[in-house]
Image (cartoon, rainbow, N blue to C red):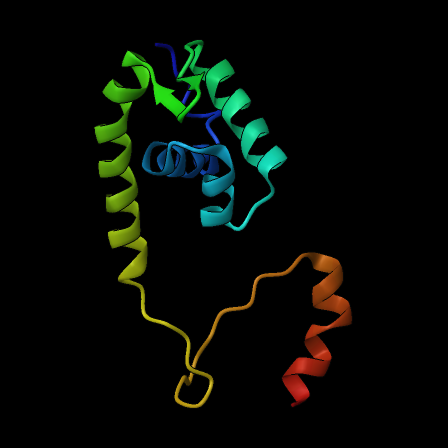
Length: 119
């Protein structure tokens, strides 16, 4: 199984996780709030990146291959670590926050920033 992390779209791992949980393309799409074709396309892209088939279609839904089963636990752990790390960030409350950071390109700085600063 080959994987280039620099080219990996993390959304593909979310799709893989949903497919492993649901074992059904339509239910995975509902879980992810995406269309069924979008989930199918994401699965095809992940399959291409890994150069491995991940599921077999059966009458009962999707059956994971040995490659998918081997990948599932590490993917779940990685997603959990990302959620724990990113979820621990403080949330922005506009009623109590005294500082915040704006990121914008040069054009936006020239056009928008002066008006924001005067407020």
